Amino acid sequence: MMALLSVRGLARSYYGVRAIAGLDLDVSGGTITGLIGPNGAGKTTAFNVISGLVPPDAGTVTFDGTDITGFRPDQITRRGLVRTFQIARGFPRLSVLENLMLYGARQPGESLPVALFGAWAAREDELRERAMATARRLNLLRVANNAASDLSGGQKKLLEIGRALMTDPRMIMLDEPIAGVNPTLSAQIGEHLLTLRDEGITFLIIEHHMDAIARLCDPVIVMAEGRKLTEGPFSAIAADHAVQEAYMGRRAGHLAAATP
Image (cartoon, rainbow, N blue to C red; front, side, top):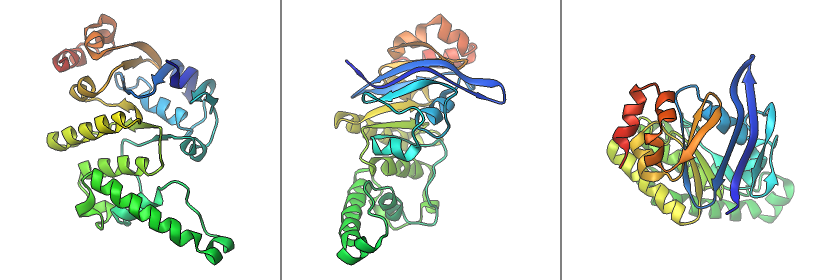
């Protein structure tokens, strides 16, 4: 199966310190792929480079057969690859519904032809309907008119996923989607991701909760020192001595405990 996302030789340094150093990874379509590793392994930097937030020093990023290395984030998003952030972004004073609408695909913008022919109003109605449907499926409808700043931590994570869905993505990169979320809502987020995967959306997930990685992800990619260390099913990853050494014992026990 051809990879939907393919990264080869990716490198990025900050002030002479190599955050990622020759990273190779593939993500197949229709999967929830986990990306794990100890703190400082380079996971978030890899997300930043893949999504166009920062340019690579070397290497290539290919999405759906197109080399997108060096593309701007908006260009990458329009091709169907979108990412979320560990700390939820958006516009805190806007309502949940307004945040979702703002991230909708194919915004008409403001121009004289749009104003004269009413295209903006028609598209706004479409975006509102789509935003309402997205809020409903993520259990955010009851807070749709609340300011984003008033949401709980878990609801903000759901809103982050909702904004990604509004872009019509083929693949979403999630940076710690359940960090700081209570267990009940964490389980709900996991169920949403499984449903979305079954509907054809591919995911690459950074997460430190190994129980969630074990439950949701196959395969799992392990990074260490800016490179891919190994890849495989979670049960094999958790038993790998090289992975245990990378996690320096304490986290290795956490890995083993999360094995189904």
